[in-house]
Image (cartoon, rainbow, N blue to C red; front, side, top):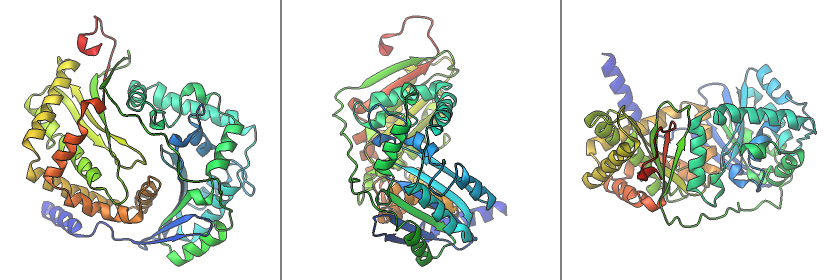
Length: 449
């Protein structure tokens, strides 16, 4: 009986539209965009301010300044004491945080809906009134460096990922880690932070996203009062990013670290991102990642390498199309005991080649499409997830129409399009292949040199 109820619930969810919330958009006279996602099921709102600036927009020599400034944004403003914003949110029973990516920086609070205007008042204060002092810098800089120590320096996999990304992008700033290179983090200054703040933090470079129990007309009126009075920055224009030069040869690297307990092979290919008005290829790549490397028991790589030949204990494929510029598509295999990295890579290549010849199993594709649609529907139950869905897309160059069309685009992609997307992306001259392992006891084979 429980299974029948679960099946009925799943089918009911699948039959519902993936975009059920009412979405209203508006732009203030100073250029600030507003997105209101109305959901009155609970008296709660998520208030987010997204800036169209991330680590890929940093000046040379100041890597990590976008993330560093994110930390400093919790210091004093014209009207708030240092730390007062977070203390006020907590005192009102809410939660707040912030995050930085390559293409955006975002700040959010989740509070009772009757506290929304207070959130706007405080957030507007730090958009236009941040007042840093020299004493703020060394303490917060040490926090960032310690964060890097914990997340990156203490992790061979994280260090390896940095090296691979630097090999993938020769010229584009996506090659630089979001948290910054450690040797540059030590030199970040008050002048660096203020210059980055003045250059990028302005209403005409920001998107306000409010999701939850909020009337759109009231949200817009509040935004006019608190954000609309902030002058725009006329110096802000389209993002000026360098183009990646054509990759002419396959790139390979081997990294050895005594802390590595389980070696693995990973290959990433340059791949197109989701483009406004044209998301079909990105949708095909999204489905390709699920077909090749989703659940081990049902994915192509899992069935072939983990169960049939048993020369891998883990396989995966990954792709994220939310990127302002070109992104990557990745494949991973972790060899079983006694299987060399060289043999594991060869088996991975053979499995992918076989898939491109045989194509997509129609039953598997139908199941994956249903799972993706259901996940988007269930995600909509979280107003915070909804707010992030829109904010991340809009700061990555997409539109509200693109966000709302995405579930249907995923459903429309055909098996032939998925294979064609794979053939287009799986070009070894556009790839970086990495081996991570513990130090070898003998000389490296020709394949690793």
